[in-house]
Image (tube, rainbow over all chains, first blue to last red; front, side, top):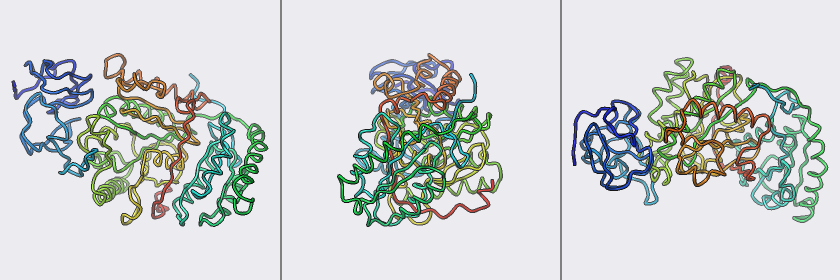
Length: 109
Length: 399
């Protein structure tokens, strides 16, 4: 997967919405199918899994333990290394406050 | 568009935007009888509310008293089994002294189920014509109390519907209306920013303390205020959900912190603290969205702006609920349940400002009598459980 350190709003795909310049994730404005090529910071990246509308993907690599930034503010921390273009969700980030909850029970912090 | 309409004037001077006859059961054992009393009046504004518990609750009695004397309510029928602990005489006195027609039916004294249903239906039939005689007078936007809640949130809620609601709250506050946002358990991570918007540093400290209380409370419960659908909809953490939810409050200064049943003294923006005081004792603060809606109505809300991404279909008894749909894919599936399609912002078909104006205009039309989608579909949810609150300090009421 291609990776870049310097995302640029102008060079990001119109199917994505980056809410603040310092964000390391962007949200899907519509559902993006697995295998689609999307433009992130001037580079074409193949999206490995479906990204449903509103879900997040990384627009730069995020190391395990690093804060995930959306709305220009931390929404939690990466629980493992996340590559550019990867789906960012409960499988690879966790709250810095309280566990989320899914059909399978609380998500361990 | 004119910013006034004909409201319903109550004896206590407050004005309503609906004229509802409420039938209230005072314990679950009276629920069936109350529901049967209401059943033939599906097309009149006759709403069923109630409290299921048999054990005493100062909180529930206060909320029931506030909703039974809400300005959208014109008359109240109380239905008691007879042996529950609810102070039915106290509630009846409060309703009567507010100038509303009221009656109390005690099933054990009326002769059982069938006799009480018959007596209840007769009372409703006799009382409905009195409701239609309620005086009307001009009601202005600065007399309106508006609440907001998000339910069935997903990751689009904080992108479209919630910021739109925040913009409308700003417009309402500019026009002198009273606006209430809530759910301190879904403001975790926003407390410092909220404090910076408080009208006094002392209030800022209390806003932070309210969110810290919520975080402690949910910590004991084992997880945040977070439903499986939130995660399926792309929300990964409570902070992410909170930032999206917080957008509903707009940018106005925060004038006060209130508790369920406190009616704000004047216009402006208020935070409703819905998390109980003291130790964790009755389980989740609000077991579902409608419990929060009831608390907002108990604080005087004439109308509720309800944002949803996953697609909540609920409405409420007493006050109309306007559904603002955040997710364009949800809107296409559930359009008949929605009033506003804010998902168009995400697809580039409308701006946030355009949708905010659409919602503001709709709000005024609903205040003037236009039914919302959930009203047309007959939604009249009402949910009230056990909680404990310390009384709001008098100093805060003067704010």
